[in-house]
Image 1: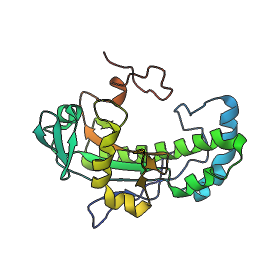
Image 2 (image 1 turned 135 degrees about the vertical axis):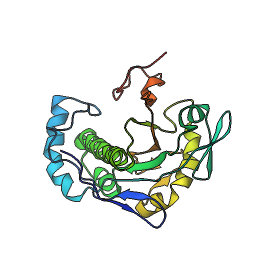
Image 3 (image 1 turned 90 degrees about the vertical axis):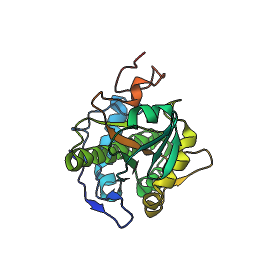
Image 4 (image 1 turned 120 degrees about the vertical axis):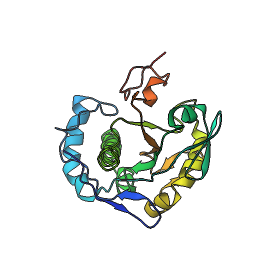
Length: 227
């Protein structure tokens, strides 16, 4: 089931997807779930129809032109990022798409109230909500901006772009974060917890974080690591 989206450009030059929906069945969700098992999937399938009624996952992005400032420095939307990886992958592109995606505050609050034996299933539901938001963003960018080969890089997932870079990214995306009540906590993690941030970009070579990630046991790996 595809996420329903409503993209609208705001006065702060962001595009928001406010009508992303959690699917009411696992039939069309083809990714592995956190803590995956047949038993967990049974619990998740039971939760989804109810959760769909109140969950409000969302996404937002902006369109910016990256500018190289040095071998390891790049500005995007007036904010400076320090990363040779960004310079290598984004430098010279006409536009990139900084983004936020989230399960939403409603789902995070619900998950905090479920019984202990349902916590893993609740986390899986939150994961599904986030992935629906991310995929809705990717579809919209691909369709409206003609990005044929969409890739993404996210701070904190690679040594080449560390967790500390969440600060300038959230500063860049500040109006969108404030609109939805997203914050960066003292450990530099986004809240609500099941959220993501990064930069989408066009990459004919098909760059993905997985190519550089050294965690060979990651259950969410989508691509093999490249040496």
